[in-house]
Image (cartoon, rainbow, N blue to C red; front, top):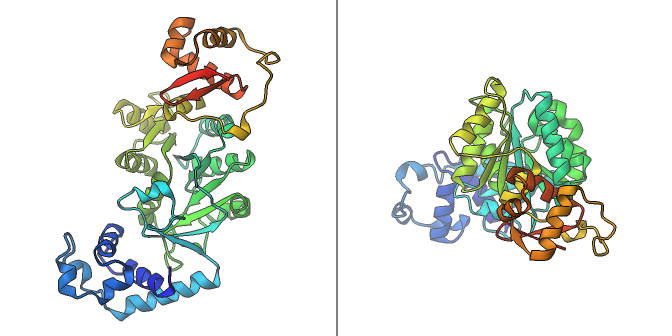
Amino acid sequence: MTIENLIALLTLKKIPNLGDSSIKKLIREVGSAEAVFTEKVNNLLKIDGIGTVKIKELHHPVHRKMAENELQFIQENNINYTTYNEDNYPDKLKHCIDGPVLLFSRGNIDLKHRKVLSIVGTRKVTSYGVRFCEELIEALAPINPVIVSGLAYGVDITAHRAAVKHNLQTVGCLAHGLNQIYPKAHAKYVDQIEENGGFFTDFWSTDTFDRKNFLGRNRIIAGLSEATVVIESADKGGSLVTADIANSYNRDVFAVPGRATDLLSKGCNMLIKTQRAHMLTSAADLIYMLNWELEEKEQPVIQKQLFIELEEEEKKIYDFLNKNGKELLDVIALQCDIPTFKVASVLLNMELKGVIKPLPGKLFEVI
């Protein structure tokens, strides 16, 4: 991208009433951000959904000046940036109609060909929520997913810290520019996160922390991943908004159930009850629903399973698959006389031992 095109795109971002979707539409019709400013206004008004209100300040000099100032910040601070039509823009975010036209980042983020999971939840997380989050990420570690969250108190920072602990890439999505960290108490985690991951935002250095920015931040959290997990939420809150956004993107949503009387379980229970989220009780549920597999480099080498110690139910499933070949989880449960909910957990343990592997279509087979 040329500097002039970047300035033009930054300028478009500062024009009131002109959102990401409209900017994409303008660029699609005229060819580039620069071309928007040289195109005749009458031609722009012919574009569906583009009216006078959206482009009346198109040529106001103050927006160009603000864009030039932000460009200076980007260059002086070595801020990484990518646009929605470039190869290094996150693949899944490209499919979101309101995804940022311009995304800023810091750190060492690499989402190419990676499994990406967003984890969100209440800021007032309980000890149960912390434990569930830590154990979930520990169980998923052999699959090597990228963990995305919002760097907030509670569930968010628990997810980031657990990812760092297990050497997983983690990405914090911010509701402000890259010249600050909120909350300030989490500044001590910045270096660890950037070492193997980093931060995304579409806010500028002039955008200070404000609650109204949460919606913009949450759409990035939901859009980056193929699934969003909600761990504890009251009946209202940002986590439920993120879940709704993920559903609107046609992504999977998981929620951790809790007791009906627990205030911080009401949101999750409601998501499950209204069928806006799958119930999540263990990593096995998520792996099964997403059809995730262990990465090849993570699968242990074994010699015909001779030296792998199997529990009684694992041995029963192994013998069945060894005799019958690949089979569906439900069939395995029926033929081995083991409850379906328990089979999913047993299969995960066997997968981690390198005895079996999942296949597309919810099938499993012996390695």
